Image 1 (cartoon, helix red, strand yellow):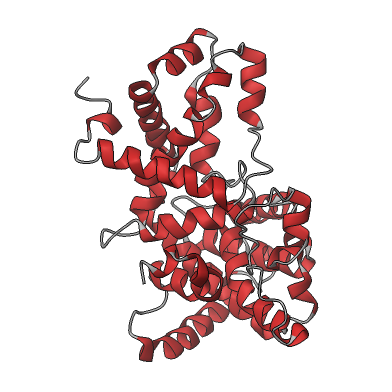
Image 2 (cartoon, rainbow, N blue to C red):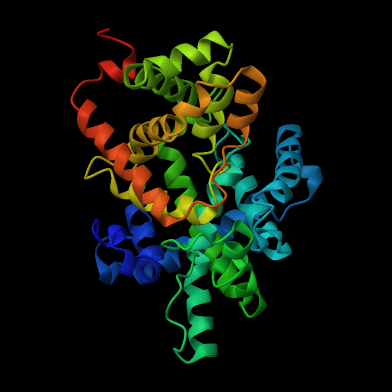
Amino acid sequence: LISLTKTKSSQAQHRPQAWKILLGYLPTNKTRRTQTLKRKRLEYLDIIKQHYDISDNTRTNAEQETLRQVLVDVPRTAPDVPLFRNDLVRQSLSRLLYIWACRHPASSYVQGINDLATPLIAVFLSEFYDNQRSSRSNGSDGGGTSVGVNNGGGSSMHESIHEGSVLDGSVMDDLALEDLKNVEADVYWCLTNLLAGIQDHYTSDQPGVQRMVMRLEDLVNRMDGELTHHLRSVGVEFIQFAFRWMNCLLLREFKLECVIRLWDTYLSEGDGAGFALGFETFHVYVCAAFLCQFSGLLRNMEFDELFGFMQNVPTSDWTDNEIEVLLSQAFVLSTLFHGSDAHLNGQGR
């Protein structure tokens, strides 16, 4: 299963089921999966009745404020991706985010959680996109992948999200409402499991995110002291740009296709220790490799130019090729520094 998510030829076909298993939603025992899906989807319908399909008058002030914030954020979620401009997709996303917040009052809803649901929605809908495409083409089009992860060619962002992938939104044209409800339930449970593994990222003051930013600064200081010194000398703090990298797991820095490829690796990085290892520890290595790629440019910039660059890092033309290189660099870093917590805890200097 671990190798399955790392094999390019298997990614599109097997990714939805692999992710559900790696996220602990589906059992590894194949004979139990159908019954598990049925039970969890019915449970989610009951949760909707309990928390969502109720009169606004019965909601607490906190719940009303949460719902208001969710409804504000959802239209801003992946606005460049046609799939997430679909009204039914937005309704599903709003509902599952609000329900998650109601059932997790310790953290409730925090901006950024909406972004984390988008790879799950895209991947789980890709099953239906693949089926629709097969029906329409009678197997004549076998060159693409269902979530648009491509292996080069320099395609633009506009082309990559509009053509030949579930992200173009065409999957919704023929999708049965029952199938969409099932996808929503699956996304809810998988998002719940994902957030449970990184829970303190979204509790008060977000200590998990703060911890990751500190780890990144310490790691980059060891890798590229000149870059760290330059950032400090011009007044740019790591928290100013890296907080978003950790809070949204680079979803606002990369195209969604690229993030999906990242998540393939994150989910398989646990190696028996749990997938949270990929989304926390390995993610820091990815961010360090990402930042240091631009070291030469950044060390020649002053505050305004540098800050603007970090808010809009030029990755719009990145493809699977660049992501593969980034992951390779991150893996090398993790290998070099693995076995000593000093580089991540700011100790042993």
